[in-house]
Length: 263
Image (cartoon, rainbow, N blue to C red):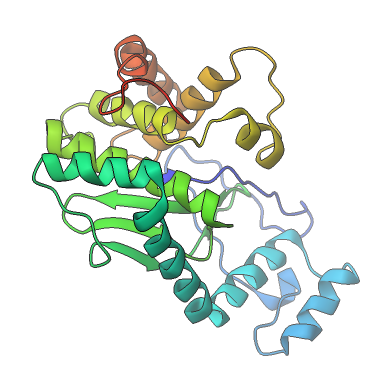
């Protein structure tokens, strides 16, 4: 359902709290100026100077980034809405998917494709958890205004979530995996495959993945596993990988509602 962004930053060992070994969910880290060097009570340029002078840890930089997103929330959402409206008017893939969703008695418009700021989370293992979009059968599509880099990134994100919407109308997907995680695995494979987010240029120049063979397949599989892992019913990466592998052949070959993979 959620489309994860592949970014993970580890704070220096000396600056981070002692990791807690646990099989359960990792605890979220909240800012402590004495530990991180980021102080929200200070002017932005003073915090920025701390970054430039090495006076802020990676954890502090994360909290600074989130703080600035709050400041620019209105600007980011306005730009997001402008790009969303443009894509619904001019993007071939968005218009095609919108038409196919309409054929299944669905309707996506500015009231249920919403631009919002999406706070990221930093956990005690140093992992940053963020997303660029999401789909909910009850509420529609979420576009994360602060995480989307440009119009092309939004087009990929919107196409990804629209594939989820089409799948839900067509098959009534078990999104949370309450009965079977295979539903989630299949729709994530299809969304990553059909949205364009795994094209060679995106993988190479944006994510730094320089695979020369089967790059597309590796990307789709990796991102599907990451998305399945985000489901509450998924225990770990091993289970997510197993489920994705179980449905891979049938779902990777299913390009509906497209005739083939175009992007």
